[in-house]
Image (cartoon, rainbow, N blue to C red; front, top):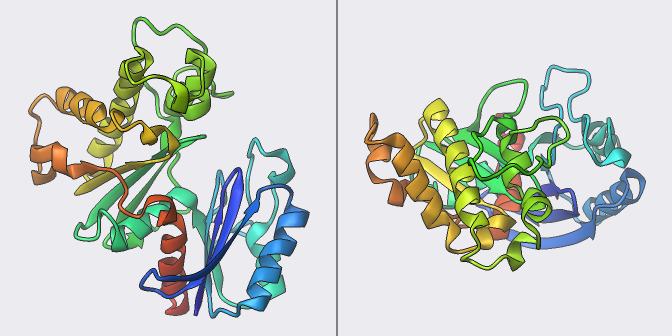
Length: 290
């Protein structure tokens, strides 16, 4: 039996299952404080014994296995969690193999293993929601790097009609600051889910997301590009993003996946369970010593 933990900015999901991604039992808590949430997580896994746990954690977070700070949440806007040693605290209490990765990397692993990218070698996963993040998985493995990508902070070229302030405290023109859910709400009025489909903001947002996808597509040359997150619940948005990427490529189809972006760029197949399923697969790799 394997365990999975998905630590998000608003909620924490814990699950027990197998390395084929089957979830047998799960529970959800609101993200409050390390003191309260760690008690809930530990109690769940003391009652549901597992052999290893894979963690998908919001960032920025230290994923360097050689670092003394491995598994520590870094300079997050969630002040209660800033510099909290998440992984170390859990290991001390449960005394089983446990590893940690960024939430989007783990979701990418889930989709690459049993979701929209299961038949592909290189899978790029974006989440467009409260924040914007990106993960990359190659041959069902994370990139062997000491830091996780921060794709949400790449530079975006503004639409000439868009002069409103970025929602990012660090950058004036970054992907997350211009196209995340809070950025849409701050800059265009209602919550993204309440903006009508014909609102002019969506053309601007599709352009921004298209830019982000285009840049990371050229950086990693993925076989599959998966775009999820709450903002993508606007069903008209995916098609507009594809058209923006196609326009930016301008027939520069230097490898096969670029010749049919209508098929290459997709929605997640695992929905909200991508992170939990990815955590189970991650736990299976941990158990095998991978």
